[in-house]
Length: 303
Image (cartoon, rainbow, N blue to C red; front, side):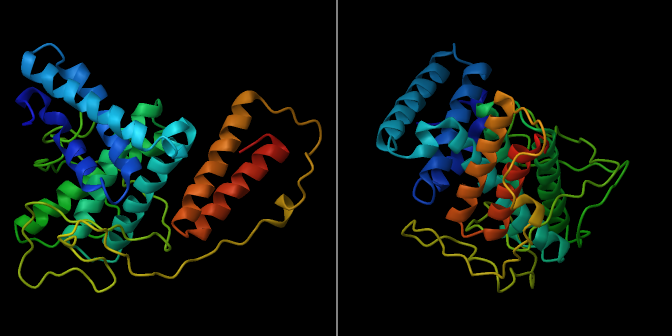
């Protein structure tokens, strides 16, 4: 069923859902859930929109039944951790490629898809300030690099502040309601995201991007086009840096008169879920960092 023009803002989230139907059904489910919730706010009264949204609701119900044994669907905190970890990995992959001056359509797609997944995180509640900044930076970077390559220009690598310059957001504004608007200015001060050399390259491709002659993806990135069978592209293994464990956290006794609030327990649980999600991707570094945060919170009451 064709997407009504009134719901154009959710088309990229629905496309991301479709791309992940086999690769990661959890991502696919929450992308559609976000699209449905956003679509209801955009237009739920016109007949064509109502018909489209009802069909989308039926699809979500079917997916929920099929994935009922998956904790990321049955437990919201696990689903939140899964989507956030997936979005961060795509962001870090693109950011590492950008910092290395390796500009190609995989990294543009990864920047932009991560921004869409940060949109999707809003189904779990209000976004953290860090996630808001990641979303804004990723969408702007995707637009900036895309426009540079389209115009035959060499993008500037890494975080940059370009006060006074504007770029047409050719694909970003259609993909989200709360994101960079057309002709919006990038941040005057460069946003410096956290880096992780062990971030796993996601299998992805970017639609309708024309790469200038001679500009190819580097050898250590996944294939640009997924196989026709729809099977996910296996990423090339990359070296992982494992952070040193803080010896002070090995003593699990609480320090002094520490009184933990229900919110503290929720945050600690969230860090543990993040760690578990990271281990699914064999990302030991991220797992250890999140476990350290949980231990520090439980033993000191502070993050």
